[in-house]
Amino acid sequence: MHLLDFITILIFATIVLITGISFAKAGGKDMKSFFAAGGAVPWWINGLSLFMGFFSAGTFVVWGSIAYTHGMVSLMIQWTMAIAGLIVGFYIAPKWQRTHTITVAEYITLRLGAKVQKIYTYLFLFISLFTTGSFLYPVAKLVSVATDFDLYLCILLLGAVSIIYVAIGGLWAVVVTDVLQFIILTAAVVIVVPLAFGKIGGVEAFFTGVPEGFFNLVSGEYTWPFILSFGIYNLFFLGGNWAYVQRYTSVKTERDAKKVGWLFGVLYIISPILWMLPPMIYRVYNPALSGFADEGAYLMMCKAALPIGMLGMILGGMIFATASSLNATLNISSGVFTNDIYKYLRPKSSNKELIKVARLSTIGFGILAVVVALLIPSMGGIVNVVISLGALTGVPLYFPVVWTLFSKRQTVKSVLLTTLICLGVNAIFKFITPLFGFSLDRTEETVLGVTLPIVMMLFFEIYYKTTGYVNPKYAEFEAIRKERETEIEQAPEEETRSNKTNNYSLRVMGRAIVAASVLILIIGGISATGKYIILPLGIILLGLGLKLMLKKI
Image 1 (cartoon, rainbow, N blue to C red):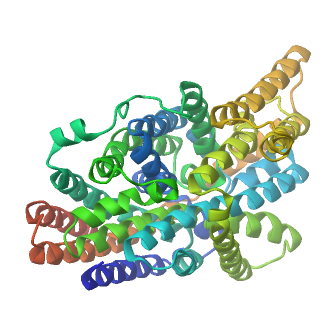
Image 2 (cartoon, one colour):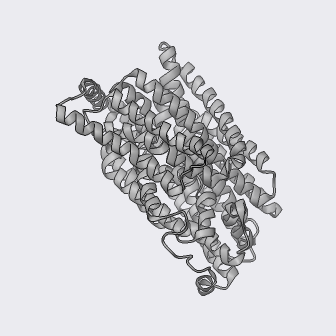
Image 3 (tube, rainbow, N blue to C red):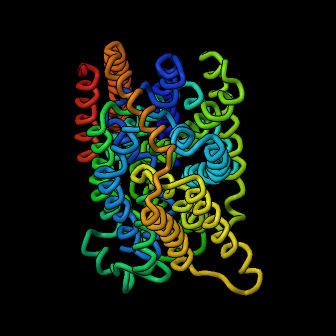
């Protein structure tokens, strides 16, 4: 990388950090401000934040690796996420908004009881350590490939940066910087694709140069049963993951919650095409990658195609876009610990004390995530970790709770048994049976992880319905929910405060985009290639930033 690329990354990092830190006041007033942004986030901001937090966990490394090796399959896998987003928008997101709770743990307490909430809280916090580690590793991998810095050093440095601005700014810092990253990263990706085609001689050379079967819809271990099962997993992971549920609960209305899911789904129809083209093109440019080397295919294509300075811009965008998944999970993990463990143990804690605990616990979970990220190479690489983690834990942990949003019959027994039995069975087939010479392939692992919890919950629902049983806790929860709904309707001052916070967030976002657009225009002005793409995009971003600075809600 050229010195100008490093300078660009440093400037971009400074812009993101200042943006996040500027929400120290807005995010630190009370628990609702820190973990739900006061319930005031505009739906389009939450939709973009959900999109960034979901895709960035490994898009450029995990799916980029699959795109380089298998081609079209990577698009098929990601299009299941688009379908999941649309379904969540229609059915699941508005149900979450209607609960009027800050965290999923709080909902579980009201709906099923404090004992169940504790079990799910400990399970979530344990699994989230591996989730956040799997989010941090791809960021560090991208930086390591682009800069030739040591991978472990990159993990330590990037973990520290993410921890700082989430600990200070809370959810507002996460969602606003997510939007900034979305805009910058989209502009950078648009620049990469035509320049990448240019490096191999055009579109025709791409289609003639890829290996046979590269455009097959399924390939190797990524079969149709795997695609279908992975799509179901995405539906309940997107609809039930505690970090993503924040995006549905921190908007004003059920209609807004629906729009969050719909925006996610629409973006996931279009974006994977742009994301996966560079690693697919790199298969033609350099077909010799093998082993874990294909995890860096995206960045290698960028290094080969982008002009000086622009590589730093796209790398900066990918760093903070990918880190947004880590940030969202850090925020919700801290929220669960503070709101549902610490506050339970010390119910008389002041808001000031709780915010202090929230920030300290964010740092603590961040450090543990760094440790997990350091261990990922010894776990079989990021592709294996991400897909296996999803297959083992995604549906068993989140699906039973999502089901209770639609059923008044499910009980502590049915929900806990489904989660614990399914997690246990999946763990046995993943870690125990291979010791005796029997193991599941990727499709079998994913199908088992998805179907068993669905079958168990369906059995319990049918059993309770035939016996006419209705869980008494459901009526108690409904009474609390309606009471909170009335309190919200009778608090017009919250509307005024929300609008002030939203207007402030738009101004901060606008200033950040203006700063980034000026950087892009400078890079475009001195670039020897790609001016015709870079300069127009810089002008468009400048106009967008200025418009946001002047916009009011």
